Image 1 (tube, rainbow, N blue to C red):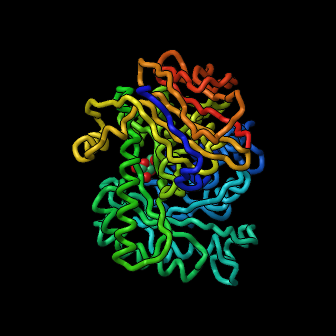
Image 2 (image 1 turned 45 degrees about the vertical axis):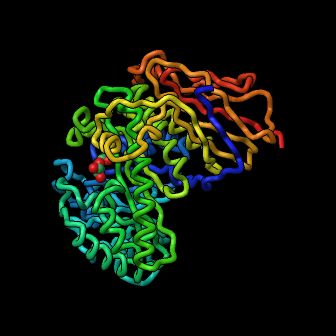
Image 3 (image 1 turned 120 degrees about the horizontal axis):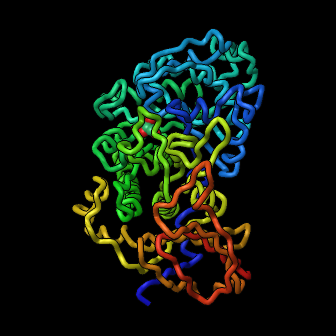
Length: 497
Ligand code: AHR
């Protein structure tokens, strides 16, 4: 057959780290205010102000870690403004999105929210206007059990026990011209190195994340080289755009796959050059489909996603699965309202098209990631986003990344199941594809299928209803499966032994 999906459960890439299904809440647009925090709204808890409908949907996504408070926002954020009695908290000008920050939601509220959600907090430090002293004070406030000023301030604010925040990152997109406190790579690396040393003196148990760029830039090379001895993860950010073209939208995540290969090599190189014997992996702490022209950051970046975007998000997640050996944390940007799978109004919420692949992945695609071999037709026109067209030029075999049939698979030992996530990215062709397993793999004659599909790529969801959602069915297994045009599905094979 010209098309085939070969799956061998003995070919394990790595365990899937559940933290690849992490989230991100920034003080931006309606993510915090009107998103997760909406005091006085009947849908919110009267004590905390946390929206309970949002909490319920996020709980269903099993989010292990949430990054906070930015993003670009953090680079002029004074964390001290966001603690203590709410009526005393100052309003400040906000320089990332040119808005105003009321500081009614701050560190203690975020910790309480994380606890209710059952997720681990991850704090991104302000390396724009913030000083090392501010960063140390924030760490002391969150994690110290000593009899010292900021630990006592936390107690005074009603929080006796330290929060023990494990994940701390050294700035956000410090390379970006839009960033308050933008730096050159060498300057950033020197500064972050000093910060890392001091932060670890205060709390040796924390895990530190360096601020990378795309994973395939000189910034990544320079900063990794200097920071490798003091960090645990290198962060990278990529957004893909559709520019109104489905193939471009769906193939965009190929850039992330290539970026991860390059970052892995840069990490190796930094370890070799520094003679280091330690683990450094990738924290892909911002990823998603985002067209900033369609949904500008200054206007709250409320993307209204369609089925094409859901196909792109499924392809994104396939990349993280296939690269399970190097990506250990990934945070979708963002968790509510801002380029998000979830949109709220004062009266309720709806789940965007992109919610459905995310939900299927975080609930089903857990276990050991398997090395799948896929025979598929490839998309071989030029792609518009810079990332992918760069690949066109420089990747000797770029076409292997732009297969129409895009697949990841896991062996879930607990459930004794092989689960296969398959995207057919073609906008008009359906493909009937054999699934090929080694002879000794024996499974139940029926296969459970979770499908995200619609007649048109432009279908989207809204407060008036959801045109795109997961449909479940059970099929008699014939050895092959018809992948409808522009469809996403997870097939679950129950193993017999
Ligand atoms: O997630 C939206 C923004 O995108 C973040 O604030 C920033 O880090 C990135 O440029």
